[in-house]
Image 1 (spheres, rainbow, N blue to C red):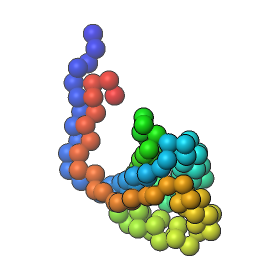
Image 2: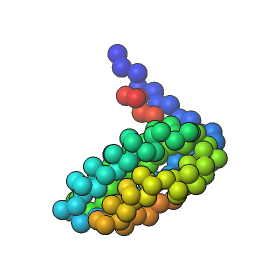
Image 3: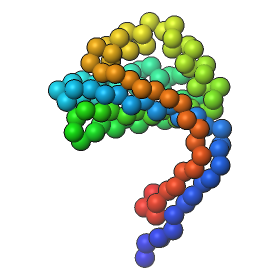
Length: 118
């Protein structure tokens, strides 16, 4: 018998999520995916307060979304300030900007709903 319950966690737990929507030509989406996976693995994940990150590509090839969960807003702010002076990050973003436009915004986590299969 399977468990059909769901889990709902409501209320801000202090976590901050940076969501970045990229617009890209379909022929460049695979390269953008490669750049973002490398950037998240080699740069962002090493920052204090990094919790996890995800990268999603649109099926039509014109968008990519990444989101990074930070432990709290201070961790995100500190990472943001540190990265602005990091040569590896600056080179990464220059490569991204050659093929895509970015629209990043920080968000507060309000609720997480886990399905029965989670």
